[in-house]
Image (cartoon, rainbow, N blue to C red; front, side, top):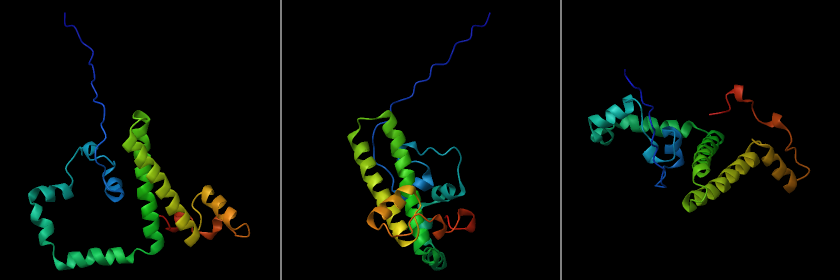
Length: 163
């Protein structure tokens, strides 16, 4: 008679290590480099494996295209992208803190990221329109005569405003 055994999983405890930039983290899907374990090879990573010198031999037209693309993003879209990136980092570090509540480096990054996100949200609200109720309340406290409670000041997401 064949006896079956249950599997026993062993998951190592994650240790704090260096974190990716907000831009890299959003593209990668994690702020922790050691958790970046792609399940398949993408065209981009295939090119990197073929030769690291590919980027060194970029044509002038591809470099100009990248610069041109970045210049086409207006200030609102650039600020929105920064908010998305810092919000992603905040979510990822919060998940880390769920399992490592006493990690000093994690807590420091959490505090710094919360502060940065609030600054970006307020900058966006003052320049364009509020994205959160907290932004509305902060604007109202600073200027009770403002029209900060009007969501209609900004475009709706289906109008192509979100990047």
